[in-house]
Image (cartoon, rainbow, N blue to C red; front, side, top):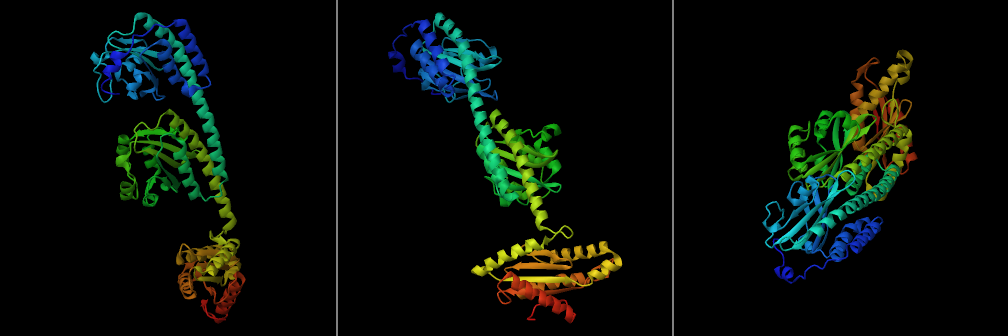
Length: 529
């Protein structure tokens, strides 16, 4: 609001000419009727009509925020447009007095009234103000403000007329707001449905899906600038996706389930219902100090940006009655970023995310079962053959070396026959476990069939692959169990391109060398057969 008004404009303004009240009322009714289908333009058209047809010097309309925390100036006409109201916090100024009292407030000279709220300055010129509460069906929806230059510039007959006009104006604005909100809700529902369908149908792994979920959350939830998603990993929660934060820096941070519940702060029933929780930046910092991660405190301090956080909206993601993920939506610029609409959107989106993650986990489980050996937990032959072809194609484009090993568990049939298949299963599980420990995360271990295993070594020469296999065989030779001491294994290694350029050629050479090692009584054969 400007600290003063144009004195010459006030001095030269002609006296208001009284208008035909019936004509003005009809004009207002017409504007209200058209506003049913043009809700967004209704406030400004009302202000302009009252100024123009009613001969009032200035008219402003302030509407109550859904949260009830502020009145927001949505329309200004005449001299009121010279100092738009903007956002008036709860309890400040005469507009709020009219709302609280639910009756008009008339001030003969605003420049001398200490109750006047003028952001950034003060009035210096005489100005009359009439503040009319706009009472809806149940609660106030806003305030109609009429200004006139000078002292006591609004005569009693005008004040009486405006009080009668205020009631239909309030009802029309309430209807317009409901209509606008319904339009947004329908549009949001359609958009959420479209996003949900797209995410559910996306051929993405769980990590990529989570990252896309976070991006959509920032786009859809009003006020959201940044976001992060932590998901359950055993009994702890880890960050898997983020927008606006350094995800790599946060990956080592781990919270317990109790930490997540304390950070949420509401009761368990609210959490299991997926109800979002609002926290100011100050309260969030207090909770963060009291809820330190079990791992990665320094990383959280460095990359969590808690010092600039203004407000956060926490959305629990609940699957089958258990907290499985937690979505944080944040604003670092506006402490009032999240209103009722933000909470409603976050609630709907949270439920949709729960369904999406459940479907993605089911797909991942089915994919895992389709490519994994149920007994040993390593990959099956079908997956190995697929990966071998892929890695050969990559190596063939000059991407590097490639080695392939086949291993045979010697004496497994004897263990099965003498000690039973349960003992034989333990032997196979021991072999699988030692192979996984001996190789890198990028190497592929599989149960090739029966008593045979295979290992694929991308970007690895034959000598390096043979060294990794030999480590596993030495460890197996020292193992002791119900079968006795040591698990003898024979192995053969083949390498691209020296031993072959196709999957069949490499498998054949590795198989031949594996049986040669067995015949020679050695653990490994990596030379030409």
